[in-house]
Image (cartoon, rainbow, N blue to C red; front, side, top):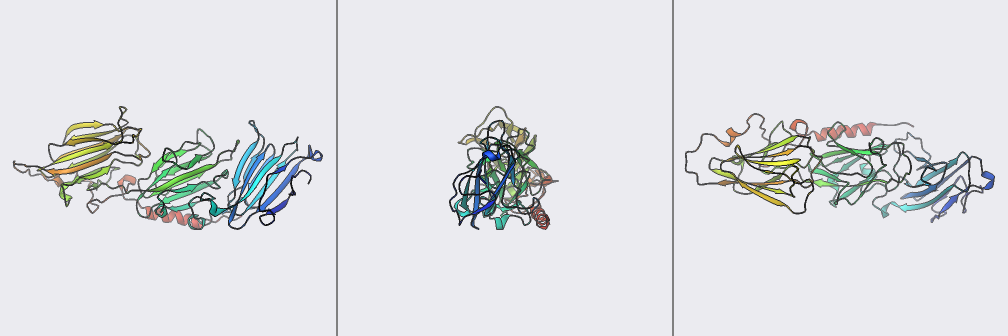
Length: 470
């Protein structure tokens, strides 16, 4: 066809052996084609260990890029990228990567007009040359759920580098349209999980189609293994977040819509790594509560050493009050120190310290964390103390929570010992022995232990049994 530049001919296959280096090619319209329909396709075939990058500029008509001529319901192939050329701001430029070693590119216009057409570069790339292509730090044969296009099981404890990446399909090119992908992050070591796609700790990228209502292209994250677990939020555009799980699982759902100009969004490159267990040294969780703990000196092997824990760093509903109660022996007082990264006067989060029933102080941690930690120190007059953390607006996560340090200190008590004991002063009903000096109950519905393994097996089984027939 006389409208195709270079040695390429319309409706042909170009492979790596025949032409290992591909230069820019132009599909334009000859005089004989003006005003007539035009359809043309190219198939680019790379080596088995390569992927194909297609950069296209088009000014009118219809363009579709796919891995191969596949049925749209094929269970293991992403849908093609389909878009139209001219829009109000000029020509379309799009970059598309393939899953496999081939690319199928189709051009079509209903009526050829002027000199406009399609201009494109094609590059054959070794998958090993870039960790981001096409799956980030994910092994397709290990983590991709069988019979799915883009559902992943990601064991965070295998991230040996301490900071790994997960990417949207076909990143860093345009992601597929009308697609739903699920990324299930699990930590089989029972540590928690941290996802970073915003802020000064973020080294990746977050760039979805702009939509102020987040109705078409977005990610949403659930604090657990399924979409019925608490929703931490929904994000789109370039607005990211810093997410910390309450337990050992997080579910990220990536949903895309029909797309639209200017088709310049490239998806996401999210950093993930593990985070320490939600432990409270020397404490026991109060059953049936979201975040209440008790610290009883009679249960400690050594009472004269400083112990520590931090305020909740995971999701809290608005208006949550977390209580930390301390019970010493009759001849003990309690030293308490708070370590906060700056304070402010808004008090959207506040920490109150009590000496028995007497209120000692209120500290308001800053929502804009400072690099240095401030310390506030208190000493009780008797054996009981309480620290409460109130979150008026709630929170998604807090990467730099307030640290609480405490020590039971023996005094020279000369009076008559009271008949009450730390055990009798505790809450009694609702107290749950978990076991061990620093035992813990995982955050879950109603403060009950998580059933992560059962939910995970169910989720995995459903996915692996799903079969889509084309």
